[in-house]
Amino acid sequence: MGKELSSHLAVWGLRLGLIMPLVMLLAGLFYRLQIFDFRIALLIFAVAVLITMLAALFGLIGVIGGMRGSHTKTMQAVAGLVVALAVLIVPINTVRQGAGVPMIHDITTDLEDPPIFVEIPRKRLSSDNSLEIDAEVLAAQKAYYTDIGPTILALAKPEAFSRVRAAVELSGWQVHAEKANLGYIEATATTPFFGFRDDVVIRLTDQPGGVRVDMRSASRVGVSDLGVNAGRIRAFMDLISRQPN
Image (tube, rainbow, N blue to C red; front, side, top):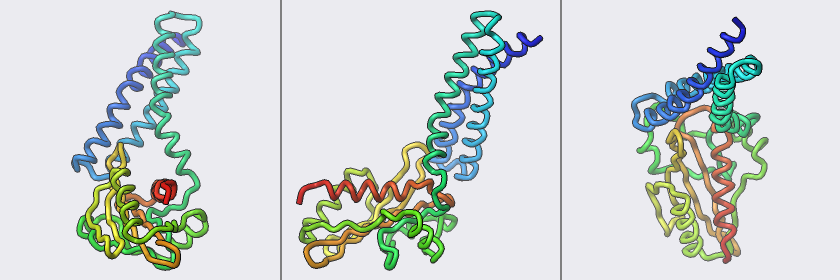
């Protein structure tokens, strides 16, 4: 009975391990196509992850139970376990990276005077996150993201704007508005899997000896961004800083 049960679990572990990645992909695809609300898509994805964890457990039980049984069944169990663990790498790594970050989704390099979105609000839905930053969000960012700040470029404003604009293009963001004379760019970054949209505004300000570049990145949906917006700002500031003046 024990061997028969472990054999059945091994088969189901492999089946579920192969099916659940397709379910995850469909959840992302249906959200991108606006068939599902993001909450439904995330719920489906989360359930698929839990079932994949169950598939890994089935595979492990099948491996242990099949050590003295059929070689074919044991290999099925091993295959199911390996597939399930491989599928779990991405969601587990995402959760690990986002663990401990504050439950905020709007990050700015200027806590005193955050850059303001002008064109982006017209692109957003009424159900999307508000673009008003309250004091609690600013306090949470100040306490946790201590390294997030502006970048100073030792360039004239036209040259600085050209560099920033080129970096936006290189980042693959969709530009909605830009004014070189005002030093202002609004764009949208789209995440690769689910296609979540995060809006970005970049502000260039003259100051003695160069130009100050400020940036704000805000997610349209979700309570926590799992650190994505802060990571985007770091990467962008590093990109424009690494180029020689």
